[in-house]
Length: 148
Ligand SMILES: [Cu+2]
Image 1 (cartoon, helix red, strand yellow):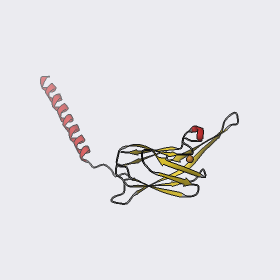
Image 2 (cartoon, rainbow, N blue to C red):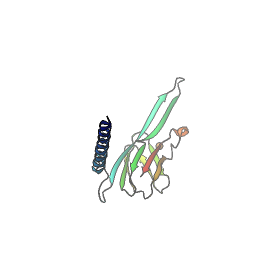
Image 3 (tube, rainbow, N blue to C red):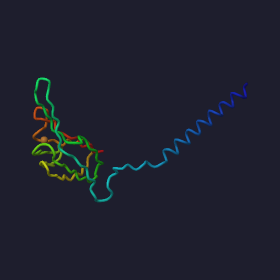
Image 4 (cartoon, rainbow, N blue to C red):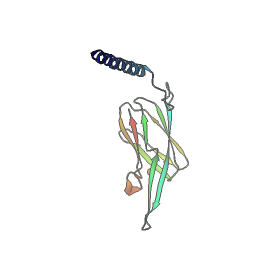
């Protein structure tokens, strides 16, 4: 009986050792490459946005709408060079600024605006349409730029 207890302890230690070895091996395995990995060297990675519009009619017949940047959030690496290309689909024109920077511009319907981006500080930067900044002005047309 006593012998059996010792054997069980060895079995437990063996399982523990194998688990430790397996996790060590997994940690040593390099990460899988993602499809959207940042461009190497000096080439700016392209990120594409469009201007969109939500429209609805309420039960009492009121027409409501909201302009949007789509997608509404993008992720950049600190120091990474990105060319943000925004195509105007809905709305005649969307003048914009990026909070915390001196970046300004405008997106016109049927035209593409290219905005060079490179952030040297982590944080969340808001791309704000100056015509549609909140729901009372048919927004909020705000996209979030996450810099990690
Ligand atoms: Cu707008």
